[in-house]
Image 1: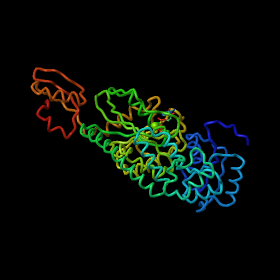
Image 2 (image 1 turned 180 degrees about the vertical axis):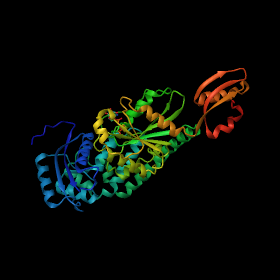
Image 3 (image 1 turned 30 degrees about the horizontal axis):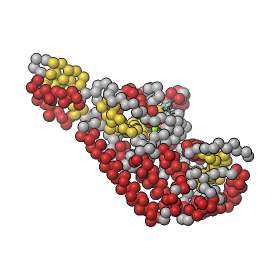
Image 4 (image 1 turned 90 degrees about the horizontal axis):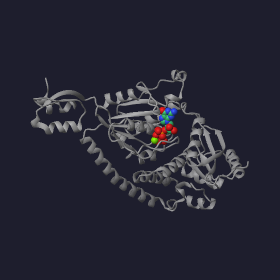
Length: 429
Ligand SMILES: Nc1nc2c(ncn2[C@@H]2O[C@H](COP(=O)(O)OP(=O)(O)OP(=O)(O)O)[C@@H](O)[C@H]2O)c(=O)[nH]1
Ligand SMILES: [Mg+2]
């Protein structure tokens, strides 16, 4: 077959073994997703080779017959990579590259490549580098040799950087260094979080599968906010892993109540453990949240699986005891019939459209109920001699009514239950 070559594009053969294990996420779904992952790396899949098999071969992943078939396809197509829809062991990669004389990438390698190209902040870059080194370490057996012999493509694992030639001990040292650097960044983050705690501002995080619409929802909330309208919006794109750096903004409602909303990195099936580990500090926003919003793309036929992946990662982060609501997003994209037929896997959910605002009122109500639940609205009468108390409340609390009377300032204000005793003497009866 003649392939029209695009300068920036690279080409690959995709290989997958159908184990028939996951009922919610079929083999075909997994294959389409890995195609999307390749697309995000600017790699086009020109041929697909699949095999039904109980379990892969330890040494070469594929059986001898399939391996020969694959080699023939490679010779015909002249591809840059062979991509496997799974995580391969170091031995498997070495054997496959030796036999196929082509760079072999697995699912994890692809995900890491996307992350590496998208990371912007110093922290993001460090986290990706850490994940990559952790992934490389057990796969380092003599790879430098093979890569130089096969004339590896642009995305040779480790992106052809000198890390590949480093031995494991050096990699361990590097991992140690990066972890130390990340600790420093984390200290700064912790400080910011403590500051927020001191100010009593509750935090909410948007979590969910990649491309579910978290950043779109974040932007919707930013538009609603009556204060701190930022010019910088979250980056929204119809692609996998548009967001890598978590992004937090203070959102203030009309009644003056505020909370911090965080947009976070999206999850994906078979997310490498090393990445979850590496991203833990970014995801600490999630761990320390008062409330979580699980964003699910209801228009995806795999939405149940995607919610499950989200729940699993949340569990891995030990954030599964945080109160949450499931929002089924992109409701504008599906018909009422489909909506009726959906399996009901979440008991507390809201249908929304982050694009046109359907259901957002209900979502706001739910968020408020959960994060401001230990608050109560009271009436106070503060003498003018205690003007500083009045101005403190005016600056920091939600005030629904204010009236300047002869005896002092009358305020209808929201207080935390724990603060009631402090203001008791001003209670208006
Ligand atoms: N029709 C429709 N499209 C939506 C809706 N919400 C988001 N989208 C689209 O879905 C795509 C992904 O949206 P993002 O907000 O970038 O998704 P995300 O969850 O932040 O994705 P990652 O950052 O990759 O994890 C974009 O093309 C959005 O315009 C919605 O309610 N309806
Ligand atoms: Mg995003």
